[in-house]
Image (tube, rainbow, N blue to C red; front, side, top):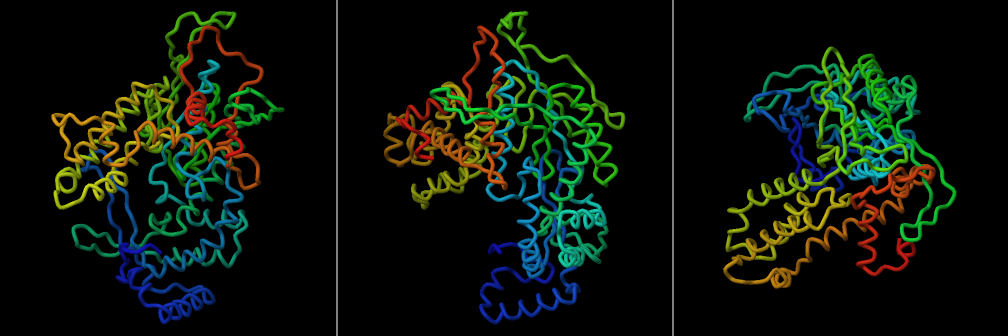
Length: 508
């Protein structure tokens, strides 16, 4: 358990248990053994303290807050024991499309797959229809009785199912606001946000539902071909076809289809199934995006250089029209229908500027804080905001220059160097010991390229990340005179050549 975390109703912290040493370990072992054998809950474990966590938007709207359950630390330790026994079993059965709360998986996996799907479809001027689906109060809406049935179907033993049920039997909560507590109330539905097994329990149920949707909708998504290509020599071994229909990160779902009809079928089937199994699609936050295409003649020659929108189509759920958007923030990273990175770079610069300015008076202008300490804080609190998703970027020199300008401006403020001091950027980088921002971006991209090449799934087969990295359309030709923008693949080639890596496969 992590230290310095909020305790539950019993006010026992993880730090206190760690400090107790061997006597506390023996005491916990006795309690856990009794609970395991008798399948009876410790009374204090039933009560959770519910606190609010603001997400974004209007602070006056309750829907813009997330409820977090502060649970007893000892109950969380017991839950961890159960989780360790079911995690490997469950992860082997989950769809590969699910990356949420799985080892060696992250949001960048899904962002990368989505962006490369869009890039490769655009490269060959193929249509792509996407829907970003939002679930209303996903964790709070889980039907527990259905969940236990699904757990058994996924091979979890009756003993472990009973222990999981025990954790949710007679569960209660009281709300904490401004230091005051409400009366306690019983909770009959959902899995608690903050509970140790909650993410994997939700993954099990959502996996079950998605499989049902795929089976009934009978759509395949978009098809790619995978071969162990070499970016430099263009060698292509015998290829295998694979489909990408959905990408999941816990309850964040994006669906990709090659036609609007297929997308509509999937969404309508998804709405039907989620209603049947207790979840509900949030139509207001669900969005459709279509990939822009070039107009071509019969010989696949481009008629004019600017791209055109796909014909409009409407999808209505519960008499509400699903909104069509040009830009969407997926897992914290901006995705644009024309694949131009301008909006994403603007967003990253704005968020990084906010993060930097929040520390301006308390850190950057404090003379008592050394420059070395300031740089550490800068690398920990500002750079990750600025460079989030940079592994997937295929940006131009203009974008790099904008990012570099912000980067150097921050370093000048941190070091107290003004423009009037006439100190060059190279000198500031030398004083601070920081690399140029272009080097950091290149390093992130190459590190991700190596990770993608090594990534295998639970069956020791190439993962979707690796497949999409080396995917292509063997029987298709790019539109003539296309003027295609630089692809992610092209940026990786430039990075490898810049670093003078002659045989990149040997270093992976």
